[in-house]
Length: 434
Image (cartoon, rainbow, N blue to C red; front, side, top):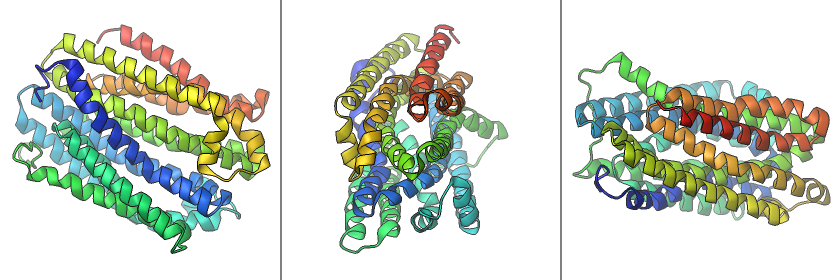
């Protein structure tokens, strides 16, 4: 592939299927756990999983911070014809990921009980949350490195290997989930161990890229500058905060759902959370299909090609968002049955929540693409604005204020309102050229 000369449409399609496949299967690590736990262990167990999910966001977010931030700069440097600088970005991103993963491993295991208390584990959910979280902490390094390696391998013109690696890990994870939860009866421990093993296999397969003759990912410790580290953090911050704010938002909405509807509300919200993982993964796949091509052309100052790719990506994201919204509006009960064996109380509360929440996926798909586009064109303040508004500021604001007027319906509507207001702001920022 020649990212600077081949047709933008053809390049986007070459990246689209591998990118969407990889991001969708990444969501299976959590999705498979959710379905197996909800069906095989029970509704309190899936509520406990939802309480622990913010930790996943931190680990994947760290990989995204250094992986996407470093990979964008890697692609821009390659487009500028400076492979030595590209290698330095890869080196620093890898070192920082390793350092943070080690910290998570130590801190998470020493302070696990206070962390679970802070996240909202109750007497009813504590046992499930603890069994899951203690092994999740052990897997922190593989979750972080999985995101880092996916980003760099994809940006080094090998999206197919990224797809194969994630699919292989996801399939293994799903099989082990079934094996550990049903025949072996290992409960929550079996679910998370399956995820750690599956993600580890993904990392091993991604490492095969380093043995390719065409691989440009090489370590270089010469002329490392502190500003390179600053740039990686600057351009990867929006990806990190997207993941981190997602975890914070889950925490906030868990607390609100618990306040207004008890454990039942948390169970219903867990259905929405897991649905959002699927949609966000699909939308991220669309954004990541365009990101390395846009970044490389940005380095080469090919504005016409950048504009063409942006248009293709936005149209694809809009179609995806509308499709997911339609599914939620037409088949809300089917969505609920995917994750749990619903009681009458769940069926009374969940369908309306699904309908309201799923409309917001239209704005979410477009906002995710705009975040990636602003990153790829080195506009970090705009990317950061989009991810903070949709992922934390507006969502949390509405989550606390709307229920005062609309009761629990206000919790589900908070995300919808935040996404569409953010989309309007993103469109306005895009009109203002860099």
